[in-house]
Length: 216
Image 1: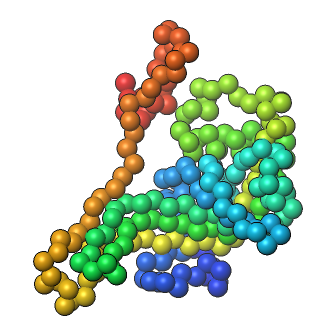
Image 2: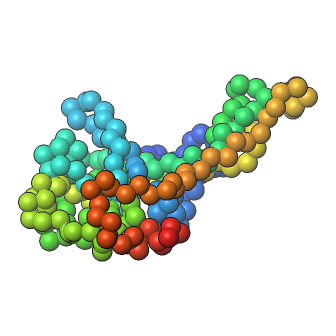
Image 3: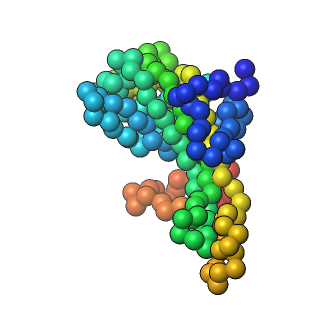
């Protein structure tokens, strides 16, 4: 199925023309990021946790300390919600009411389950590759103690939606004659110059993962 089914949980109600339910669009938003916000509720208290993630097909992998609230909640088979957002621009209208932002966002719903010991390395590799492709092969892999201390949740995406806004401000026709500047201020994330660790030996070669990003 190329699109997620639309239900009350994932249906975009505000500005539905900006909604997307196809997997290709949602995967593109997920693959372009490395930070998500994970929402869940414990005994009526909502929590939203920022964390890194990895994707393999229709499954998202999330990790944390094995004894953390997040991992314990996921191991209980409770529903969770994951969001990923990219802010692309500030939309400055003539009226304060019509100010907005250009953005790409994805909201995912599903029930998490713990990843077994046999699949932990595969899931951790996905998370590492989401952070920086190629870095997993350059790193010391987790040892038995680290694996035991790490809990990993697998979220099969049951329902999802994306919402994307692009373009200029949408002012009321009467406001367009006002002597007020209006337009879009583009925003983007930008890689800076890598800063070597102070304890790094000068004989250590520059990693290929960073060369692949355009550094030399």
